Image (cartoon, rainbow, N blue to C red; front, side, top):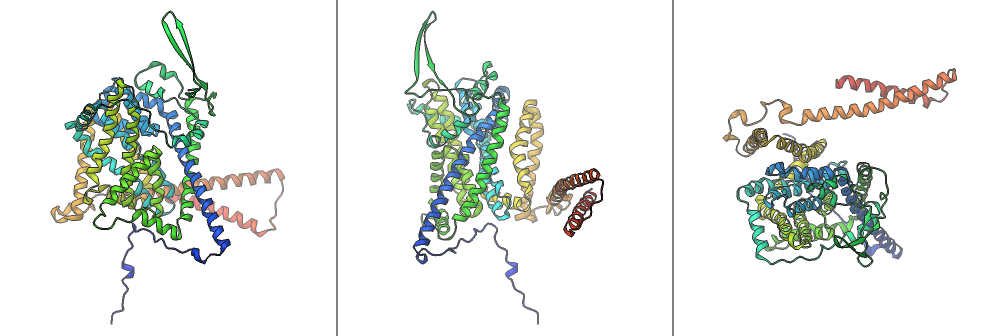
Length: 596
């Protein structure tokens, strides 16, 4: 009789299942008075610490944006001066991406575009692809944030998928809407009709909700004169010689000193300002040096805060608290209103982004929650879509504060950004079958969980290498751009179609194309590349250990020569340490030989 075989081992767990959140703690009713007081004080202390870490996280993002502007702000302004290149829609798209990556702020890059349109240097139709590019560039921040959870494979899978679902939405929207806009110009026509139909008057500045809290700290560290970047973009020769570090700050409105002077040219009004109070106000360092200092410090604080936030959330989101939050965030409305849940999440994402005035801050905040299993990927997706809407409302309010003569163009560009994101939501959300960003993010998350080095390759390729390649080809002319990109795009489309047919309809393909085994392994698998990366990483680590061992041996030899005596080891532990060091050195040599 054949032995019974259990099928439990054959059933694989779904890697995307949420971790079970059970109430494992002591119930409140079972605690005595001292235990209840201690639990309340512990929860209160953790909440205060969490709010403090979130505050430092937001401030570090603000400083990081200022650092990137100091390092690459003037280069961003110079890029926008290439008006002949901007006439190419694809070049305009990647320029919007690159500038947003340089300044780490879609608001800053969008304001530069609005300035150029208002000054007549750019047409609205030319600025549309740049706005689309800023939408893609701003999504890299939460992808970096997901890298902080690389230590745990399951958390990293969920976190990286939760971050890149935003990327895929932006890329797919551009892939469909940019050719549609070039062919029909529907965004320009629609927004122009809206601006002309309503008699919109100039209003007040956009409300600074979160900045009221963060400005006291961030402005005590650095303040920037963002008009310098806009001045370079519009061709102001004096702006190139100015520093981005602000020295003179505007006096408060209730204490401003106004002096009217009558000269032979007429009456002139002088406004007096006071010297700024930030750390670098009187520095002799260049903008690049200050930017690099702030970049290193802000990245250190940002990563530290994220790691501590994740650990603190892991300790807080246990027991009944975790069960309640999980139910609130991931439970749908009862039938027949279940379909409304996602749209409510879009509204929540838009509202939260409007409050913090930054889509990067909001999406970066929910990425760790997706990683630890509090928010499902299917719920994080509509929240990210809502953040795209929320960041455009801030731009619309800012455009409403423009002067009357610039209000039309400024508002039209802001509305282009809004309707681009709304069009993307219509394409990739209402019908579950069209929610391709979720499936693509899961596939990439699974891949990066298996080969964690691939996450760095993805960021470099999508956000740096590809935009720089397209920008370089654009400088060579549209003939070169088309001649290089068209064959690459054709090959990619062919590979995608063959992959789909291999999975669903292999009988439609010739026998040779039913698998990629006819190609070398390195051309259709990441295994050979993974071995190369592993060997290189091992060699680097081993070289560091070998260098340390060699330095210790040299120091020991030098000391022996100075003493001119033979040292006897009475303690056996010392001889064991020397043997271990020799073993390490020998193993390094063996590893070097095998890797070669």
